[in-house]
Length: 136
Image (cartoon, rainbow, N blue to C red; front, top):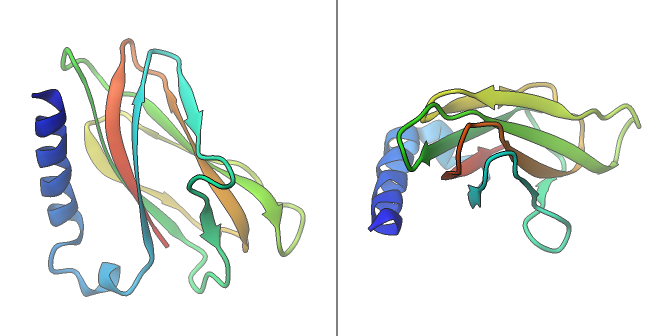
């Protein structure tokens, strides 16, 4: 039942996020799902699901995420874009953003060209499940 509810909520969230918006239709997007225990983290490693930001025209990445806990408690999830091998300057840095609500958007601005992976860390008081979309 939880998986069905999660899938339905994901569909509704994606429709609300990109439905009828021409801007998102022209961008590249990636979809990722996760389920993490308290304090757990997961990094999408090379060969799995990399976020490739080659020739990125705007240098901005928008993360649209939805996450939930089993008991309805506050959700705290940290998202990090971690550079693997910058193509431009070697001053690429880890960018961190925090969600403290069930769904929303997180913006990473002025991203340098390069190859990045996304790391998600659960800072909530209990297990968290959810998914996120990266638009770039």
